[in-house]
Length: 336
Image 1 (cartoon, rainbow, N blue to C red):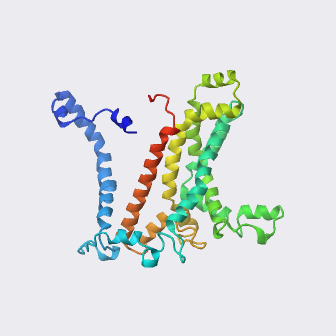
Image 2 (cartoon, rainbow, N blue to C red):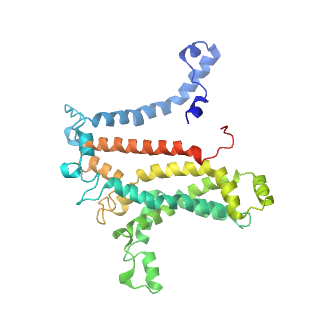
């Protein structure tokens, strides 16, 4: 992995800038002028808030304190409170507790349930949409992609109505086909059905991942399939030995984005279950608990601590993914 970074072009030094011609400096000035809106936005809305939350995590700070209140420095107390045993007075929502489910464990549990669906279902649809024998490919691709254009909150409300236990279309259809009313699922109101409900809502928007997979499939050279066919490879062997290695960078890209998105899962439980954690605390995801710590409990210091812990978890998971990519991700132009 380090060798890949060593092969990158070196950044220009200050001495190199001084050696630029008058025309080169002028072009450089115009380039920085056009980049300045992004740079200002990054500094004002990304970097400075990140540094502010890092500073807040070492304080005892509440929203109600006001901006002119003197900061109360507490050192590592917020981090100690984060990692202490719940029985010793630590945060019961963070780790294992007999009274309240762990928000991080809830997030990981849902991720293990939703991640395979979010990777394999778009891949399967992409293989189907890229099949040369399929008629009306452009129509089907458009139909599968169109739900992704719908604003996410609107689609969540739509599915919340469809999965309503009393008046939802799905339960009405199940009862129409003979299922007793007392046996129909309660969906988002049932601990056993809430995660499948959320996954169903997520399937609604897989059109974007499907198109990315299709673009990867269309980049596979057809002569590789011809060679595999000449060697007597079956359809599965051709997929495993030709298709999968060639589209593995696209799968890896979707995998990283999916994992990061699942760690930040927030909007669906906030809209569908009003951010209450119902049923039975099963929907108190980590990012939702972070949000409530900030704006409901008004504890900016501990909320910043939770945010930085989430950042570190995502960073570590991403680094692990990139370190293992060399064993299964194939880049056609890479020299090993």
